[in-house]
Image 1: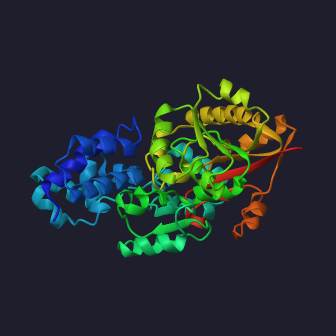
Image 2: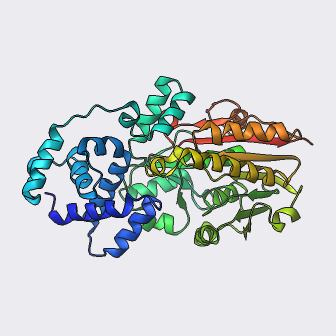
Image 3: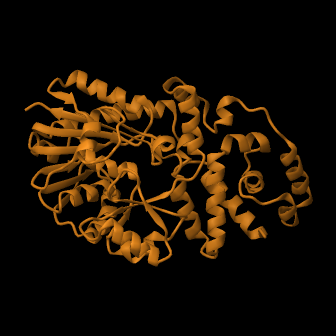
Length: 416
């Protein structure tokens, strides 16, 4: 049975999250810190209700004829969380009971964008980019939660041994279909408290993100730069591929993100990673390494639309103007990172977006102004790594096709 306190907590959480001033997961974490009395089941109910609301916000708002947090909390509980009106009525006021009955009976006529649970501008952009079947399949995939993907740290454990250790803790998992290091866990286990995670033997990382390491394909003796390292998930992957040899620089302009890399780096057992804080993409550290780097990964700041299964708030927090600003920023970062690449070296440009504006258009613009670079073949690189995945010369991953987050990557080779 649902309790009044649970519904009240969900309403309060939505009141915190729905202004969409900050990422929803961060806002929800802060909400839970401010409400330490909420139990594990209460938190699970609030989290599930919050993210279900964010996924289905347009149709819920249309059916509720309200954007008030309390109304949406009742609406999502009835429509998405499997609670019947009979179960809910005892904790509602008389007015709310009447409203809830009207909500259940109302079937609004939705526009195509409302039915897709997208803002109008994003629906239009997807409609222009994909054929109808692809568009609809992608949109449907965004309305379901993402699975939990793990990456095995091959320096510490094999995938089979990690899977067996997880199973011994009643965590079932299956090998991911493409990444040789990936495990896809069943359900929502508390991985961050598991001994394998605490020892650095496994990390949480989407399979699509893992595949970027095979596209960069660093060698043990090389100098490699992760140009937008963030909290370092891909840095740790590259370091493991290099077997903790060579030199791997982790660049970022955010001290906070690099701070989150430090404990992960300590757990990983890697000794070849050097984090560096940049003032901007033109920092003197970049200039000092110009023309010296074998492999550069630019996992550029982007809209994140490839991750909408995990971060449904992004579709409400972004705008056409923000996408244009991001594309300009991506072009600047790519231009700066390219100065690092030595003759014969490789630059990989990647995003977790599905929009051409942030992907192919940025690559096309770069190649048009940098004749010393040529487009490489991502499919051929994956084939060399014994991965049976061919999306063409550029890597394009989609949740409805590949089961992982949406990712894009292009290999840009500098002439010898």
